[in-house]
Length: 367
Ligand SMILES: Cc1cc2nc3c(=O)[nH]c(=O)nc-3n(C[C@H](O)[C@H](O)[C@H](O)COP(=O)(O)O)c2cc1C
Image: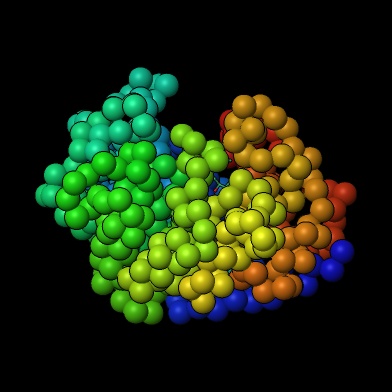
């Protein structure tokens, strides 16, 4: 198969990458007390050695007392954690790779199975993790202002440490998405409202603050999803017009790249067109987009958590869409978690050496 279009360089502001392959952000929980270890740095360096164009880090949490529900998820604040991240980016650059951290606040979570809880209550727009599940407090205006500032500080640190871009995690039912979703946002103030553009106010303020902190020339990505782990089939925007009203203000606030999370990239976003989420986001905003979701694998990732194995699958449909100009970049999750050299094997057409994905790969940092 001719995969040349995946191996063209891409440049946007601070980001200059050698190909179109992005390592999708994947939480690994191998950072005790929030501090990325030397092993974490080696794990990322290996993906740079394996010719991944852009590595996005696992979600790494901002400086709020309850931004995480797991004590082994990395922080993106505090001297020790940031020095762990400095080692990560230096190692990745040393191997010729490029990287951005995915900055994250989980919002209102269910309690972690380990029994660990943060030092204060979970916080979110209205205290809900999903409709009917109250497990935190509704943020005050001061909480909101402090949280926006904490996103900005994390982005500033990303730039200071030498990362090539920053990604804001606005997807998958976490804090920013909890503001977007009526199921978790019933606020009566300016951060709530009946329409998606009204409920986008928090995201817009986060983006503006991040942009203010990093300046005009640093690439800012936002990850969004229509689906929620709390409700797989949910769509925040049910028509192209609603998507336009949602995304254009985010673009105006300072987003350079929309990272459009789907579980299966080939699924059309709306009836009457085969364009996927990244395809629509690019068409609507004119911004660069990243697609993701079961690229090169037979099964999707949430089923993988439940133990379903996936086999390698063809990239033909992906390439058809890419060659048509639907999106600019392609994020790959599980194949890169399980095999640091996936990207190189694709370029060299070593398909017989591709591995599938089994849940066992989650139990270690495969290098
Ligand atoms: C172990 C694991 C952890 C993940 N953690 C995150 C995360 O921290 N942030 C995020 O935005 N998505 C996360 N995801 C979703 C992936 O980024 C990606 O969207 C998903 O796995 C689909 O891509 P794939 O089919 O290529 O694996 C995670 C997925 C996996 C498998």
